[in-house]
Length: 158
Image 1: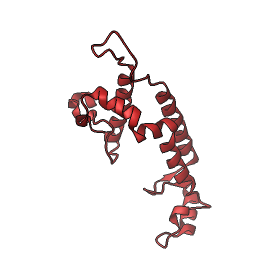
Image 2 (image 1 turned 180 degrees about the vertical axis):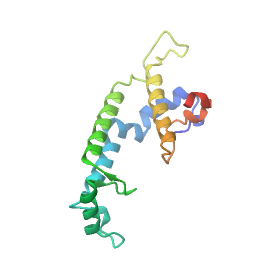
Image 3 (image 1 turned 45 degrees about the vertical axis):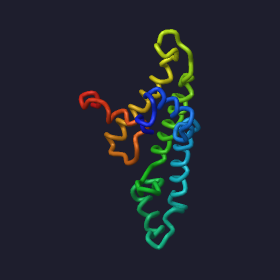
Image 4 (image 1 turned 60 degrees about the vertical axis):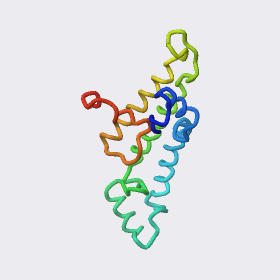
């Protein structure tokens, strides 16, 4: 999402809540479920994404068993354990709970100049800011949802 395409950050956030496939997928846990299911396809007894001639599934299975890995992430080949997937399930459930708590972005308030409450705006802003900081710290590829962090002074990012 690009803030410059909207009249204000509030409009961008309302658009993000109401129209974003990313927000909808996070709300439903779909992004996490897709990732977890992709990993489940690549347990030692399956390795479904590694059946091409480029990989030797028998050798991969042996390596997984020797090193205590339970799954391979298909895009990166990163080895994962059952505990890693359980943590991802907990993260998914935490995110779903946070999103379920987001206020209606069109909630009325007499305390603001716009006549709209700032609750949803602040909640989404904090969530996106945390996520963007995580992406920058871990050097994650891809776009940032609202490009919040890139617009902050450097001393605030840390």
